[in-house]
Image (cartoon, rainbow, N blue to C red):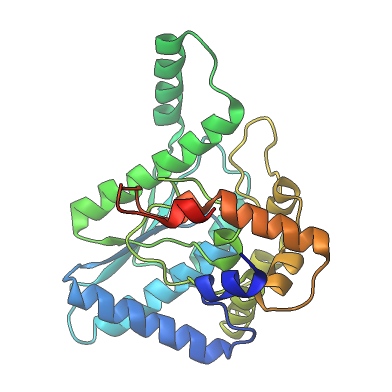
Length: 273
């Protein structure tokens, strides 16, 4: 597995035209939602770069679709765990996107119930890291509850800079129906948001998953031990240090299971790791 193999797998372009890229991906989700006969989209808005970009794309898409059929809608979810670390940014994102409908559901009671059930049944504490994954899965469960109620597609924010490192929760934010940002890196997502006149504070702030209670607001880059600049340079085919290259290739190999459907006896990808 080499740098060029990963770039090919993740379909990253060394450069994009932000306007064209946005239009192309918006047309993709419009065509797909019509073909599968769904009624629109649902997406959780965290106040971060990725969900803001995708939320804007979804809202623009349904507004264009409603010129043909009025039933399409986009529901934005606010899914705080108690008090949201970056609540102000989430409000800025909603003001920028202007979703058809915004629904807020506090996931803390459900997460606490799941953790308590686990700890009673196994007679041991759940690790804080695992609680973080539980939050991500609870949020996705809410996505699918809302999607089922209104006949919507669940949007996923996964992009190349997350995919290469596996920096998402399996069956949490990694579970969705459609991934319109696939192939973009973090730098390219910022380029598109700039052309859309998004609030700079949303895409210039330090990215964080904010899942761990013990380390609230832990940055993605600190958790990964890599900067997004390094990751994006690698994905664009630029020269990076041997240490960064080896680390990214190792991340890609060890997280391959996250990018695959459940393994079967007929699958062979895992033998190449």
